[in-house]
Image (cartoon, rainbow, N blue to C red):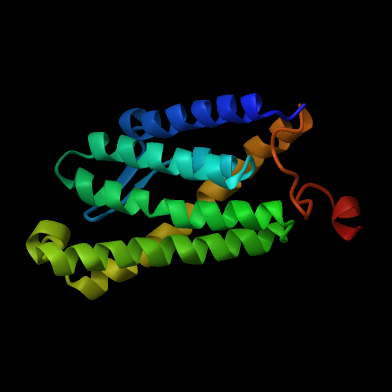
Length: 189
């Protein structure tokens, strides 16, 4: 049964996982200021299926984890991670309102990439090229961040859905999705 307590416990567990992933997962692509840590969005995306407040809490926990994990580029990566509150809040709202899952994935991918590109641009304007993007041009950085974030988002969403499916069968803690990606019969309904 879905209760406020169960939502709080699941949010706390996902937040702790979101803080730990940047610290312990060795699979990372680092091309400052772009970074991609394998499965780092999975707790955030799972939290989107609880409620918007849970998703925002987990996103803030993830930003904290990246701040401590990424060394000298930590503040920039943490700022990018903090921008996740926008895509997870809107994505969770869309799930709650039963938007088609593919639309949720696409819309959150666009928001995610755009917010990452925006924060890097703003930090570049505020602190200068050397501090934020090293020797790369801003156009190159924006392309790398936009394309890289989009691909990373899609991979992590796919991983999340593999985890979501069995979790959705054990209780009603996670909100149901409006399209089945698992079999054609239920997708046709």
